[in-house]
Image 1 (cartoon, rainbow, N blue to C red):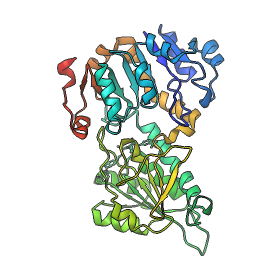
Image 2 (tube, rainbow, N blue to C red):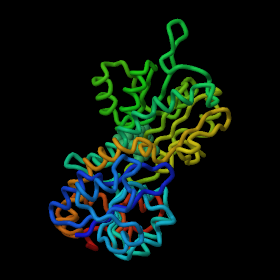
Image 3 (tube, rainbow, N blue to C red):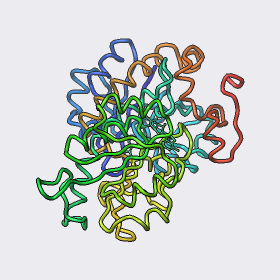
Length: 371
Ligand SMILES: NC(=O)c1ccc[n+]([C@@H]2O[C@H](COP(=O)([O-])OP(=O)(O)OC[C@H]3O[C@@H](n4cnc5c(N)ncnc54)[C@H](O)[C@@H]3O)[C@@H](O)[C@H]2O)c1
């Protein structure tokens, strides 16, 4: 099969979907991998390495990659300038976050694209196994970002996360205790902050409590509990997810208005539309803006700035699925692998992921019925 690896064009996106060591495996199994020139430059992988060590075919023109490949393997959702490159009936395997990208949904439907979203593929335990590595990274970036935004340089209150003896430390509140939430909680606590996590999944709260030996506080997120927490915290992190759907707006404008001046509000769930009412997506160029004296951070591709490690982590998780798709062919692979089938958000001109269709109020078709 011919597999295409385009260079990512989203702002400050340094990741590449398949580093040379993964391409080498695919080429070794008899596939042809077209890699766009400089696709790996932001992650530290040169064209020479792709060519000499991995056996890739380096292609200068992205139109050629899309034109010749049966499967396009990417990192981020296709940007609007990439829409016209996508071929009718092509398969695209990438983060899609379609609930927040209605124009991309229209494009995929119009072209009958098989859109397989990393973020809804499930493993045997029904875990979102291809979202997890990037969520781990985003969570672990949270303390670095918060620490910077809390300084006067960025308009913050001028505090250290961990404080110093006699001056107290920062309070951090994390809404959603999944992969992002847990990784943010542990690293924020490691930096010395006083951390509270809220989640509707009581078993998850139990796990966090046992895992962290009670050093991280857990609460159930009623609106009044969220209200109290955000009003008292220096750092607030949005990390909820309802798979495939728009994020619920759990932190309302009224709550934001009650935050202390200089509070840092990081909405990691922004790629699914954000869980903070009224928040706008930002980019690594201008990652934060201040509104009502609260610093809002809402970068949709946080791991994009740690390209090397993020590309390796992502492809460690995606490679088994790329192999199945390439070795069995897309249709057979989807039929035989129910976890991969959960990733299929669009197929044959229809939306095939229920919570996505509900979020966008569009028609839903059952995948196996139309396969
Ligand atoms: N901005 C970025 O660059 C970036 C990077 C990675 C992940 N993300 C996003 O971060 C979000 C979280 O991802 P994750 O991997 O941690 O997901 P996850 O599924 O591991 O965790 C989500 C948690 O949210 C909880 N939750 C759901 N509804 C809730 C509610 N009403 N109140 C409280 N908790 C609720 C769930 O119980 C779950 O524990 C997703 O939107 C994901 O796409 C963004």
